[in-house]
Length: 187
Image (cartoon, rainbow, N blue to C red; front, side, top):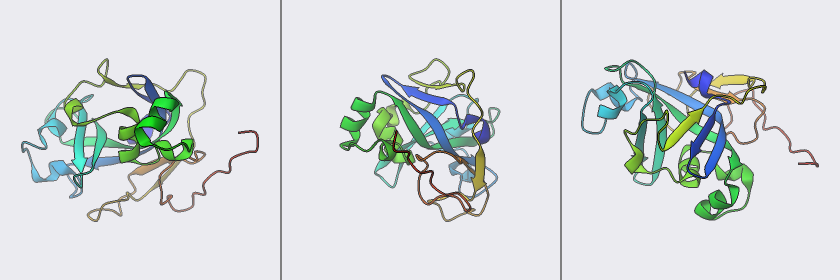
């Protein structure tokens, strides 16, 4: 599912962005919150696919994940980065910065820019306040590059991070072999 979400559009309220980076998490590996089993914090991960799992990371950032396995299996896809598409002025205001390349180039940045917070944990993604729309018709699928997950210490070597190789909005560090695309003078 993490591969399939790259190129789709994440929307919340007046803001939206094209997903350019994801990471997979599954209860079978120790970096997944569901690895410890069903708890008050992890119960959302064990729900049916299409549920938002929003949690606080390091007491600072809300992070958005889409639950993706059958009910009873703890797994989700973390949305790591977006290319901003709609509501840029509101995103700039929420993030207190102007550079579009930095608005959503990380999981905490994109939730702040889109106004996604903990109260949205457990909500339905299809038709809910947070929506993931399929890749716009007529657009080519992104050229994917896979690499190890980042920002974790357990099972970090698993190649479960997926990025649009042609996006300048991917978070750092870049996956091995990927170079940040240059911005043309016309952009």
